[in-house]
Length: 103
Image 1 (cartoon, rainbow, N blue to C red):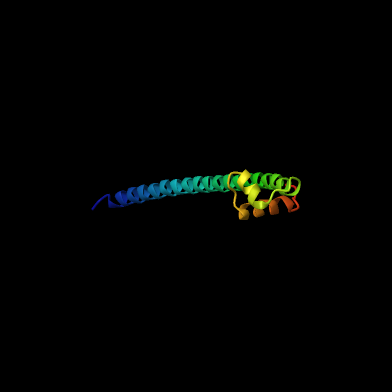
Image 2 (cartoon, one colour):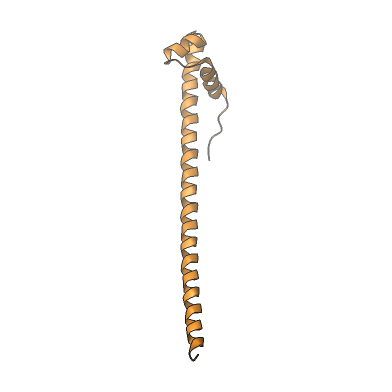
């Protein structure tokens, strides 16, 4: 079998090229996965911060409804579209918590 060494060398070379291509594709997929996962985490953290900020402001308004205007929690809930006493309590608590400035 003359030339079988050349065929083997060519097969090894082709196999190595295929492995290199597959590895490069895998690395590219991993980079994209990492980038997209990071984007999801950043966006969810941004959303969560916005929700806390909005609920804190709502809690401040509820504090005024109950404190300054003398509404009961039940009345405040009714005036605010049917908020439960639990939601009102939670948001009023947020409004009373000391805020830490973000860097």
